[in-house]
Amino acid sequence: MKAIRVAQYGQPEGLLFQETPSPVPGPGEVLIEVAGSGVNPIDWKVLSGAMKAFIPLQLPYTPGVEVAGRVAAIGEGVTSFSVGDEVFGFIGIAGGYATEVVASADRLARKPNRLSSLQASGVPAAALTAWQALHEHARLSAGQRILIHGAAGGVGSMAVQMARNAGANVIATASAGNHPYLRSLGASQVIDYNQSSFESVVDAVDVVLDLVGGDTQTRSWSVLKPGGVLVSPVSQPDARQAEALGASGKHFATRSDGAQLQQIAEQFDSGELMIEIEVLPLSQAEGALRKSWARHTRGKLVLDARH
Ligand SMILES: NC(=O)c1ccc[n+]([C@@H]2O[C@H](COP(=O)([O-])OP(=O)(O)OC[C@H]3O[C@@H](n4cnc5c(N)ncnc54)[C@H](OP(=O)(O)O)[C@@H]3O)[C@@H](O)[C@H]2O)c1
Image (cartoon, rainbow, N blue to C red; front, top):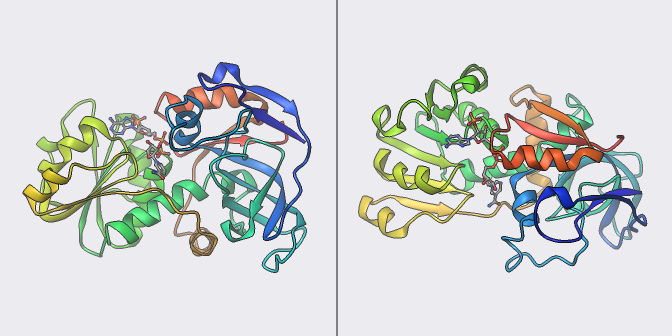
């Protein structure tokens, strides 16, 4: 098999594309012949070395948290999948930028029929993050107003659609070029963060989903209703600000969950969700990571494992 390897923390320039031994699935695991791997900000955050204290990885390692592909072998005790099944999943913190990977069967779901394998490979991390943010942490309900920062990216594109599907009124921030895209996903109001501060155009929202962090998160308290929720997978919201407003601030790490991903797969098959992808060859993972690091991905970047 071939895999992208990181021999030392730093910039994408140091990546290697190498022949490595095929992994063997252990109990509860399956071997996946990878068709595509999604690219996520966590990949370059880990690569930079900024997370090595919390996520210790043995070097060299293979980046990549999500894949889609075909089951090539199953480990002891796996009854949910058979050889030949088309699957996708959020497999863990590493290993996805490869032509083969081993993953725990309970992190996988059957690929939606309506999606190509490359499209499916961009879904798991973003869709699980958006779903858990909206439905587990913010408890979004019909008729509520939600402000989504970073709405045109991987998580944001899913969150806009899921919030619309939940009957919420979606306000989204993005640069002007992404506004038609966000309206097509279901945003009823779009704000160009380069032209106006969102605080001057929106107030009294029930939920803020912060996918940007920093100053954007700090300024978001002023548009939240008392009793509202600011949820961010980027960083921990300030507890004192939340208390002063009678609101709540929630930070979370996305849980890999094959059963939840299966429900999300059904929403792709029914046409309730869609994904826009940009495809680069696996051999050009370096360029893909640089692009993701620039923070202007629309939808998802995915790596094609055939090239
Ligand atoms: N804790 C967890 O488990 C977890 C899980 C998933 C994601 N995350 C984090 O969540 C964040 C979002 O992830 P992602 O995959 O959606 O990232 P992404 O796809 O890289 O997001 C890119 C998007 O961000 C938008 N953007 C950049 N600066 C902005 C600003 N100031 N205001 C509004 N939009 C802005 C860009 O829109 P324009 O091009 O229009 O500027 C672009 O569409 C990342 O920090 C990621 O690490 C955490």
